[in-house]
Image 1 (cartoon, rainbow, N blue to C red):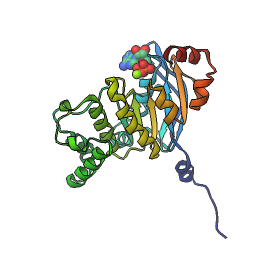
Image 2: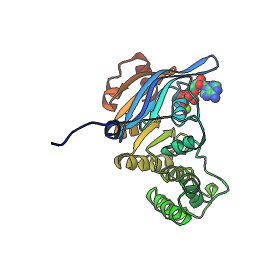
Image 3: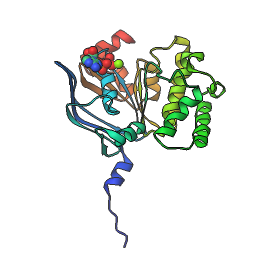
Image 4: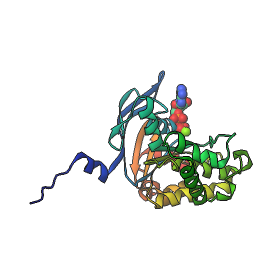
Length: 256
Ligand code: ADP
Ligand code: MG
């Protein structure tokens, strides 16, 4: 007879990838994250929306530990966030992050930007790193720009390079913090399309954005934050057509 047992590994492999439990954070007197409970499953795309100052960026930054938390727990793939050192560097590599400001290394070529982390953190040899970088640059549609410097690219191209750079680390989850907010309008779609494709390919994604079209079409779930709390969580259709909270109704009336 074959014994069937469900190990912890099975449970992790089947579902939860990012888990926040009762997370609290203060900036001095400001209680910026208040009792945040949030679970993101493997392959899930969660869009986080909410007014400016509600804590969305801080939430992202705690997930890859650019910010510490005061209380609660965060686990990635079943492992608690390490405090520092090499374990933290590895964890950061598991969590790809794309910011509003593209944050590329200005003095490195596009290709070097996408190779660097692979070599330094993942210890990939140079040839493999270059192959992978070129493949990823092709994938995000900037393969022909590989030898240029970031300043020679448009904002939309730079942001796609930033996405390729994050993907080069084989992250388990990708965090996007308003990735199109600094872009000229005509460049927003080329970045959203790359993100859409990533979502279709099954990447687990947490996306802070004001692009409600993206939320409607790509998100499995919308998380609405206000004043450091998760006020409402729902499927996009439900959230946009029938928000429950007054805060969400008010917010949507201003942006839609
Ligand atoms: P959002 O991304 O939703 O606009 P943030 O997470 O950036 O919100 O900020 C939430 C609140 O925390 C804001 O009031 C902001 O001014 C404050 N805040 C953010 N970062 C810091 C910091 N490093 N020190 C002090 N206050 C901060
Ligand atoms: Mg923000």
